Image 1 (cartoon, rainbow, N blue to C red):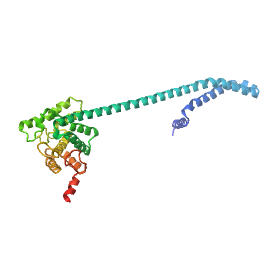
Image 2: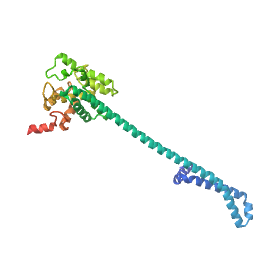
Image 3: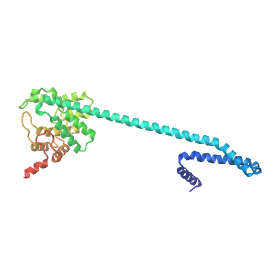
Image 4: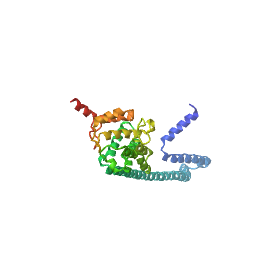
Length: 320
């Protein structure tokens, strides 16, 4: 180890052992001792000729004259630095408190906006329920199923929220379809079906006027598209369809088959499972269908949904 390194290490260790507020005092003492030594050397002949008590008094006088101004300057700087540090600390504390308060206010505002958004979307969904009482609650149930599937697939919270909101409004375009067609007890003729098939595009136009995430618009417009291009309104295929829309499509099929309709009673969970398996990988995304079937094996019944019970319960009943 070189002398410079040893000196540097020793100095660093010494400095680290001495508290910061003591360093100005130590420096002052060293300076005073040096100045006193210089003065005493110059007055050596005089000091040697004086009696001991006078020599001691003169040394004390020299020490006082030397020490007073130096201590005043050095400790004054230390005090000023300490005062500045305290002021800076106080300002930092107030700044931190102000920042915390601002963050709390922003969190409250965001929470309020989210509640307002949920209420607005809920109002839109209820508007459709009023026009089509036979399928009242359909959008809410599809949203619940879609959200569960999305979480089982490991999607992020933002993606799940987009799916939930999109599913809550996926049939909003039916506001443009005459209620007598929506509630018709018999089979629809081709012209009536063509009118019903306009609801995804109409819904997309409605939602597009609201500052939603673009994915919500894709869900509303694409939830009837199918992998093989047999869906509507744009006959999209495969990866042309948003994955989130594929999730809502599976949830929509499950809810529709297991719920009552004006033209038929609920077909039951067994029929829904058979249909999902039949369409798996052909018209409906295989990964989403598998996640949906896994959900049915473990999930609790969806509120208001006919015949939706865990598959384990069905299997147990069948083997009894």
